[in-house]
Image (cartoon, rainbow, N blue to C red):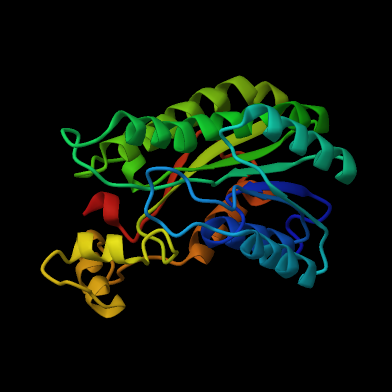
Length: 276
């Protein structure tokens, strides 16, 4: 099928690379114009190499290559006022808003006894409050449009506990609670709200030395292949991780008319990880 999002406008945070880029490009392939936001800078307490403005520009180029319009913006989801201003200006330029993907997120690792207050707070500020900010900035425009769909990106950590990332688990569980409340609040406005829950995804968030050593502490510099062997143990299917496109396709389904009566659902894209 093609053209499932023809004449739609989609807002995607975390769009410079990874899942956010995959959502932006996949939605453009199906006919949507894109508002693509990313901080394009390091976030304190994280070790993941940051996205750059060049990454965001590449996402914009990929969207335009699909024949769609795009408005890219360097915006921190922790800054509500800047987010509201940029979204309002972009929605005005496009004439409306139909779809929201709250995808921006960070990762870090520490046991609770070792975790600093800053590490805890930064995680919640980005991965939970940032999602709330995105919803807050977008909802008036969805209501004005007469309906729409929101996909909040959670994680398998939003459905189960994981060791050494209690702050991440708490934030991602919080996203599920936010989704369920928003689904109930916004149903009268014909706005559907759902979450997606990936296992490890093949992005820079996991493909870095810090995460590889976390999975293979027995090795000084584990290779991608050595990391993959260890990562497979998380999943039911014989894969170490899923691809950004897999999450984008699930998001596309949830935002399309094929899912017109699906709301308040937590959809795993996890190779069976949560059932292992």
